[in-house]
Length: 90
Image 1 (tube, rainbow, N blue to C red):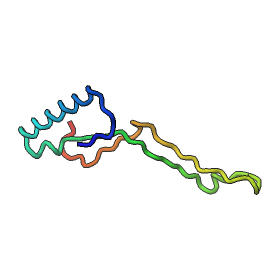
Image 2 (image 1 turned 120 degrees about the vertical axis):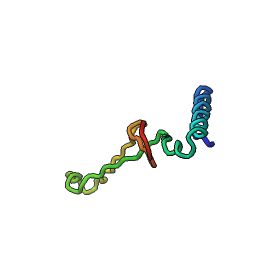
Image 3 (image 1 turned 90 degrees about the vertical axis):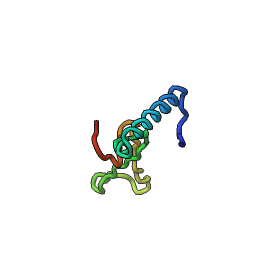
Image 4 (image 1 turned 30 degrees about the vertical axis):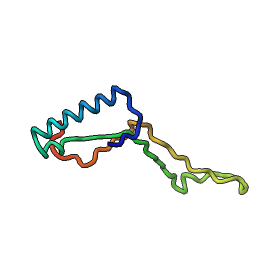
């Protein structure tokens, strides 16, 4: 298993405990328990909202540079994504 971030000893222990619990559920319930597992990760998402030509029209001198598009980055925890969820959400 590849982990992209540095983990503290406490985080490593929590992952080990969680994996042991998941293996126990798998032994008791079989393949069906796999469909109820949801995992996630923090991500940075790039967001750009372009203006229409009319919105961006401003008076400026011919020799002045054109305005640059402004882009935004969402903060972590601004967006969550769950893919491939099937089964009971409890």
